[in-house]
Length: 105
Image (cartoon, rainbow, N blue to C red; front, side, top):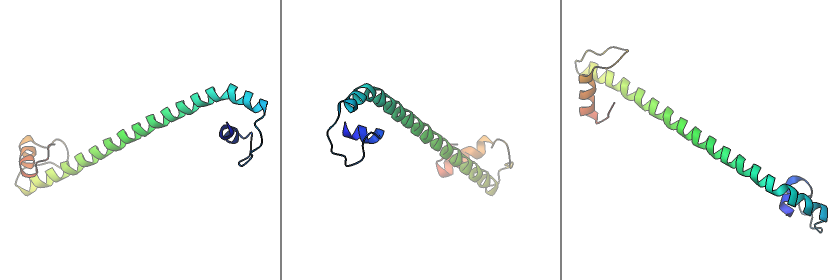
């Protein structure tokens, strides 16, 4: 109860005086609501952390895909395939790249 009183600003840190009845009433009235607010905030924080982790994974997958697509184009050009600078990469080039590197595009 003292930690709650200090956190809510009802007491100073290190105040070891007796807990008075108004503080007890305040604690009993507000603590359940305070706990539910803290639980909602924690759940929201975890939800946001999960969303940011998913977004980071998605960005990493996109960067890896772009890297391998660029390498596949370079591989195709170096091995005599006709590969454009934009647009889809022909299947035979992707198959040759997969056979060479083991990377699935």
